[in-house]
Length: 343
Image (cartoon, rainbow, N blue to C red; front, side, top):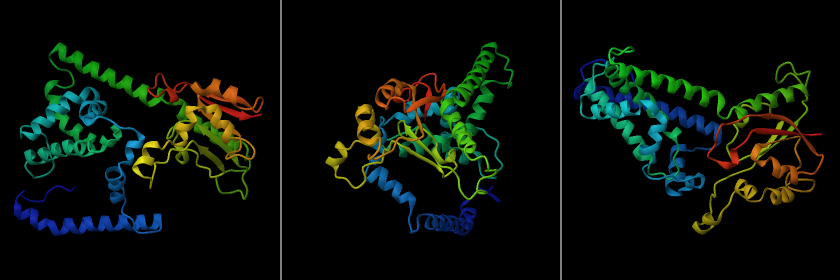
């Protein structure tokens, strides 16, 4: 949104309306053309999203949360130590008492109140959907950061070395907390999943020594990979960039087109696997079955003993292992990331 060029009044608003509408129409038109080019037919993803989440309520298949989740947990995870300041800033903005420096000629109270309404409206709308995740709140994070700046600077005045010793301890505690959280979440947690893809690409490139840069060879040796992990555990093609890496994973497609009774009884492939890994491997892996044993088999450490009993003896040996997480609330994702290679 560009700054207002004149006084903030009804005349300015209506004079800008045709330009804003034409700009919005152009953006929607380009977006529709891009979707038409990609999907091969005219589609409106926003309408499909509403149908999937509200009409069919299929998002609940991936987990359901309480109605108050975003306001009791989601915003706390998003803002962490800055949450009290974000709450104060939102309250002050709604009451027209938040002072901020803006580049627009519109009254600051009008702008900050509008921003505060947005930060409340988005969680309220998303609360109507049973499936909830903190990442759905990411669009409001920059807004809350801007609104919170004033109360933070005021509380720790003079910033960054307040006169009050107690406030200095609070400020330094927040800084230390954020540094530790950044290190743990950015470099430690899920570090095995982040590093395994680089190792797999290196393995693939080692089998194709004549490949200086991708696309310069007429034939590449294929590599097969099987991922025995819960759905959405790895980032897939954003990291496994070579199409010659033939990878598959346990699936978790939603129950599209099924009746309400069938939806209640539906169990995806990943859940069936974890109910009895040995039975699933016996029924689906091997010659003449749905999947052949891949060259590489990736899984979390908690599954290691089960696979040692269920995989044909002598077929694999461990070739890569890395620490992944200090703790995980999903028992299926506990343990190191392990890769076994065919002998």
